[in-house]
Length: 302
Image (cartoon, rainbow, N blue to C red):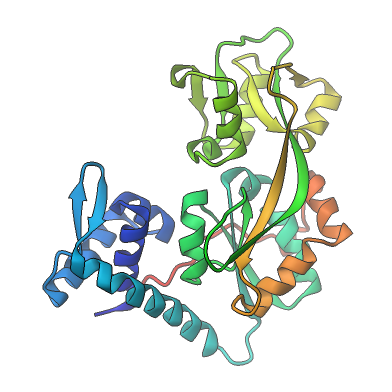
């Protein structure tokens, strides 16, 4: 029995599918399926069975889940504990839009001030409680997340607007990957406006969606301060809708005080500083080349 096998089981059980577990862990679906199969053989129990489009726990799986989740969390703590002399590690997960625009400048500023080895990754809102409680992530930025043992606090007030070209079409809605997350602000806006699925076009990143909107291909939801420069230059214009501007917040979610890591607590405090607020509002100022770090997803997988 290995940590990767137990991790695969915990993520499949909590997220309901091999596909969702693989995405959250940052590995392939066959890798998750293989680890789950090995654990099933070792324990002599199916652990999870398919019911419709979801995986459901067997009686043995229900008894194992709490124990396995604790072992996975302890495994992540053990990895962190045997690194004497190395900087503390901080892994921050965000929704796709924040990861694209805010992750680099924000983590750059933080690591300039604190001796922390910081990395970032992308996660859907439904995955965040499991990533935090399994200690595969220390902090999550994005939508508000609730759950036992979690603290979620607002760190930035924002406005969601709709943008497009003055003479562009209005029947297509152009969105980034975060629209695939039902809990994202973009998804909430589309539901408020009763936008039909057939009208939505998803782009590989948010920049591509806004570029297509500027070229007249449709309209796009946008966080107002992230498109402020394009609005000033006239590349985009604000499109009035019955639901916008929509007041939103960016939240920081961690484990409760006393169980979160020291690095997570330090980062949470940093997010309340004027410097952090400034960089979240104006991330387009960029980061020094020597300080740039690409976004990565870190897991316990081996």
